[in-house]
Image 1: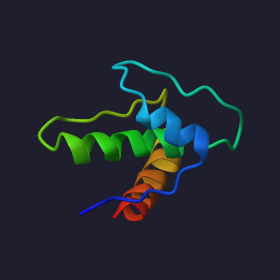
Image 2: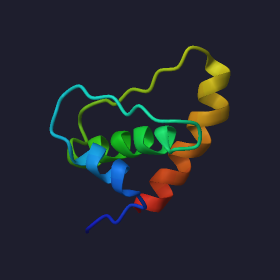
Image 3: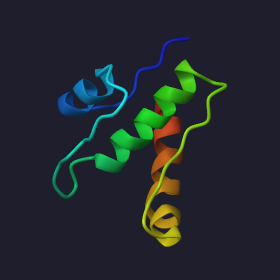
Length: 78
């Protein structure tokens, strides 16, 4: 089963990088959370037995921003 995520060109290039540590630095509304969630989904797809993590300064940021976005990305990725 192939995945066909919705990504713009910079996001696709970022997720294609093979570096262990990388940073997606961009402006407001550029899809940083989307590409971060995409990276988590990609990691889960490629390495299902390895835990993935997402960190933010406060729990409300995770609850209000990450949870809805990761759900949307997971649905988009199939």
